[in-house]
Figure 1 (tube, rainbow, N blue to C red):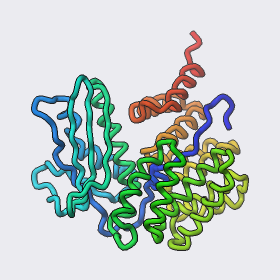
Figure 2: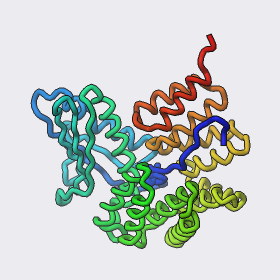
Figure 3: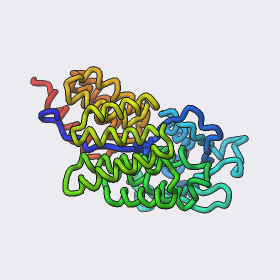
Figure 4: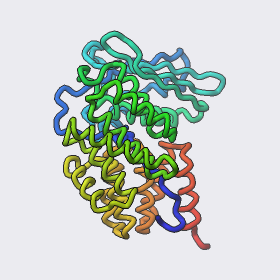
Length: 363
């Protein structure tokens, strides 16, 4: 661990989702061919006439969300349902609806993901900020939904014989919970997903990864988390031996219990299957940093962040590594962007203070 630098909480998404989450997991993990990729139609948001803040929040939402979703290589398709010649509701798998209001100086938004087949709500989220922070809230909403949708829908939207609608609802909740820090609640949601969809390899792999993170947290739960991580990874690989998330889960778990040769083999296998796996790259970069190979680590850290940019720990790893290499201007510029995306993240705020103190002008 770097002397004087804040400790990193093991990430995920997943993100997200990458699956890791990237994510994933929350995390997004790209596939060579998605075939009939799932699609989301963004409907016109419900706003009141004259509510400029709400109208501004809704304007361009579909295009921005589409850019975030595809930035890591996801094949998930996002359509603007308000554009001329837009995709009809019944031509998409899901519809994103929103209600946005300015109330007493605050902007409030409720966003729902509905099944296009019957209109049933399968996921919802709410946000609120002062009207003066409307742009920040807009970006926060797009990033949050991009992470959740890439995590849950890339892998599950089509095959109802494996993932039922009830399982998908829980998986969406789990993908949203991944970056929340509520470890036990997240683990329960992921366990529920595997109970509802026992043949869903990515569900088992995400559960394995999350337990791998818990191993890194330390404490009395480590033996149980280690066992569940390795057992869940084994179950995922029995279903799909090419599931990169499961190989990552094995590698990250073994890394954190000092079984580095075995961990290296598993992480190498993961990155062979998916060179852009966000969590695999994150942990490989972490190991390189720990042995002083910082220049090489930066390549893996940047690949991980770019493959699943929706989770702040991966971005912070790049920022820290740039600072370690004395590329301070780049670190500060990336940190400023990260603070806009995740304005309430203490780790980013703390590192901003460290950068300002460590590299302050002595004059």
